[in-house]
Length: 595
Image (cartoon, rainbow, N blue to C red; front, side, top):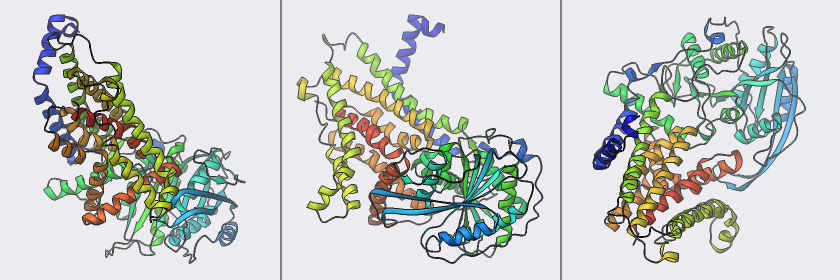
């Protein structure tokens, strides 16, 4: 404390930080990138372990011989499902729902959605029925997930004959994937946060402790993939992933994370590359903010959930339905033993493999090294603004700084509101569909925003001053640091990706730089191009590279899905980028062209 309270020592420290500001910032940026990439190296990670005593003390004895029932149908066979569940001794109920989308979803070819959820409740014979578990299987038009519905019914039939259940078990077959799950969860918890219309639930169970979602696209399964990423980057408790991995190891089932098998040669370049690709896939999926399975919507209600997806990768190794049933039985029985919600393990983590994890205490350091650059540059500007030699007789007026800030945020508000509200006008005047109108309007507003805030300080205050841009940059640096910090607390992956692209250009931006080159670099590191880069990187990581034209179409599809996910499920990525990140970037764009 003496170093900071003594004026002479504080002056020496401040002078050192300002004199070495640029070298320190460069070292921090490189150290942050290297630290993050090093997290995939196995000696720097921790081995997964079961923290919950009720789940990790002993293994349950798997006695079930479960056969899968294959249901060939087109769409949602409501009456057939009701009869099938009733024949298995469940209390069966249905729920109807409807939702009109803000604009057509061209990926799934739907606009006005109507559907029905069917669920059956197996009452706990040895408990007061105050807690419940959920096993769900989406049933959409076609036969893409019929095997999961058949397995769910087989599990219901087997579970009905067991007497050790201490929790109610809900078997849910939902229509229209996430929309059906959203309607059921909102009705179950008596909430309506998305404006969906649905009928109230006639049957209820206890407080839901955990949920598993089944996705089996084929009757031939070679491996099981665990999907954890939920809405807005939320993850379930790590013990749920540990439980899945433990039973896969016990039963000899091939298990994957991000569709990639685990490798044991971590000390080779190939092994490290494999782990780094797996971790980067998790980061990209988490950063997009969408739910990658039905389980993602359960997480919003503090229900630990994950999706188990069966994969047919044409390997020689095959997993039969009975083995998958035994695995799910084991997981449900372990969850049935819980005396309280899963809470003892990590909620914030990254997984380079199912057997190793990176805790929040390790990966947040990489983010901190990037954000501290913004604070160091802000400190340098603060010192220069307070220097007597540079202090002007009268500082910059409030409007000089406030005008570009306000106009930048008004542009962000337009980017957030106008694409959906102007779609009818765009369709009338241009030969485009509603979805294309929304996406192209968003792109047009984003591009027009590059001209609107340009030298806006002249509107009210005349020529900009040297102090004016420094005050504006100081404000923008602190604003960006707060934005990235808050984003990383909610969704680390999104905050880190934005920091990697925004920190270098924003920290170094001044009006004295070459305008053309600096403008090109700023555009290439803008939020929209960051999303475009993520699209290409993701396609490379899943080993499905695309051309430039295909990547551009995927980029437009990502924009439309981001707007839809926000309207339908409450995803925060699009409003965050439109209302905060993009206006903050425009403030630095204004600094570049400051006169």
